[in-house]
Image 1: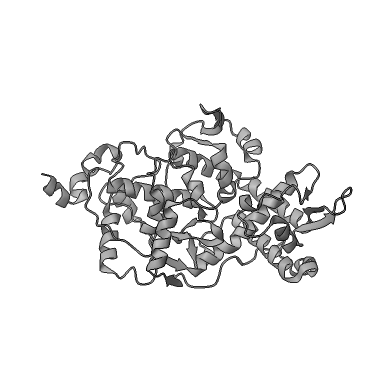
Image 2: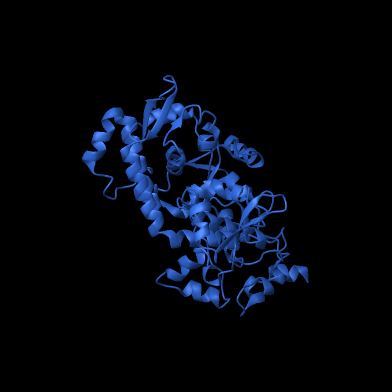
Length: 427
């Protein structure tokens, strides 16, 4: 009987029902997909984006810290130990001095040898534009935060796990004080048994329980695939963009075809009834990771941030192996002494496919940073002459390069990635 089930088509078992957890019990023990070991392939374009946006993120976080300061400035002593926290490879003092168009240095009034930094007029103008965007996009921000909580087993996430994701999710600074209290019908604060403050979803919102993959298929002009999925005749297919040489390999192609045929389980469905060792669970985990990255502004985040959500998301202990097991969906980068995972379909030719207004504002921020780095004191005059603060501009954080600009690693690099997956990031 087991032999026959193994060779039956998935959808000959399910047809004509829509694939849901209640009628997938025959599939939970399926083990038919071959295990294919793939070498890690370096993508220079995505690595460059991650490299430059590491500095961009640090500058934005420092801008917020200065703005929060009751004095309106920070002393060199106050941020002396922030280098690791900000993900920088240089001391924070040196980093601030690189960008005089954003951070103005001056001596402390009492201790002349103590450097202090405040925001320049340009930085303040950019910050005011950012606050305006947060206000205009507030409903979108609330929706993304709701969707994140809806994926959790208890619809709850600790603030200490949520804070590191604030920048990636596009949440405003001090969102727990200025955003959450405005929506008591959406969120509430609770204390866990260990005393940690958590954010909980106040009420399930069925209208939001649609994944980015489902929405992308539904919005296409030809929605035959989505209609067939809704009627239970087929499964949704993940968009894949393989490094050079992978897509044509017979083993890889056969493996991906089998994977795509597996039923798609929404990340918003309860997954506790699925066999944790099954291939169905593996596809469900890929779907959860795909959805979380889709919710981020830059379609990427640090691997350790996802690890902190592992239990609530019902992910296996070694879920990070999927990032290199499915290189057509994810890209794992080791730039900047940390491990970052990006969603490949979120980028095309080194740029975001669908840039959020916050992402476009951050492009301006990066341009101001780069101008200050190149022209130092003259940068402020150049910025006012270019008028970039008033107009939209092209993305400078990416490279104009094809998605196929990849470098295949040798066996040594393949093993190096495997070792890194077992360890923790240096953060």
